Image 1: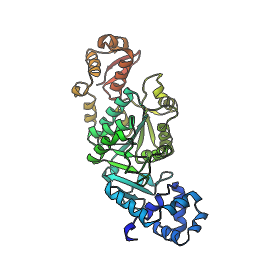
Image 2: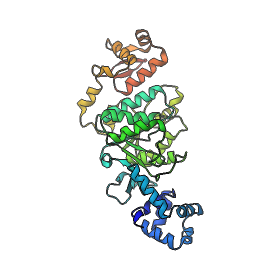
Image 3: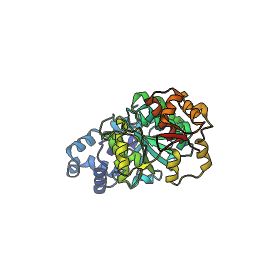
Image 4: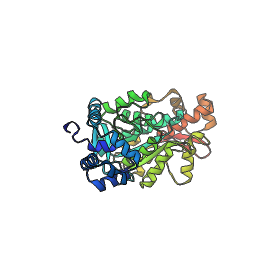
Length: 369
């Protein structure tokens, strides 16, 4: 058994049992090695604890050949094991409901000690939502905040990109084995996360493919690792809303981006705001509520519309130039910038979330100083 030394907990994880079921099994048989030895001695005894399906999976995966193959895959893809008993296992995950017994990881564990916020939203996100998520993640990252998300398309990808651009490492939690690139389009982003000292986590062993039920379940890890959750964009029935439920169950604050009025993309956001979600329009709002304003001048500098103008899109620069002259109404901005109403609303939304402008009563806008 030398070829599979220390992989007995990986063997247990290969059955994809619910965490509570796995904990029950360990309470009966002891540590993973004892479970493995008991299974080899008398497999029928496990039927009193596990369903036939889980027993069958453990039997299929109990061979030296299978476990040696897992080890080879892990070595090929630089995948490591983080066990519940390891000192580096994050305390934040130990007390959540259904805490994972084993995590697989690529990258650096150092970022697990950083201040962290989770950011989630729709895969099929609006343009304004994606831009706002990326800019917000960058602002927070510049204040040494790690952003945690799920490496999906849309808001997740923008959250990771923004965090990387801001200079802090980002953490991705996937819903499949770490030898699987999913979604395939995010492979360059995945490489960037690892190149910039970030971390990719999964509770699924190598070889496990994506499945629909994996993603809402893994969301408990995303929120569990973070001090609070930021909801950027979500419909009422979406995976992002399961993250909100996990965060609330874990006693975490949920910051809700207001989005565009009457937009179907923000149905979940608007519902949460009516129910008491924390409204925010800038990184500074979140940092202040979290009591993380260790360096207020830097945040104010990022909100100074006279700096970093090269990073603005032409549409954003046009709005800022117009507001340099003083506050303006939506209609006046339409005339001054030559934008159409939908495009202008998107630009105003992005500039608000970045703390560049603020809305006033009567649909007026002005630079935020």
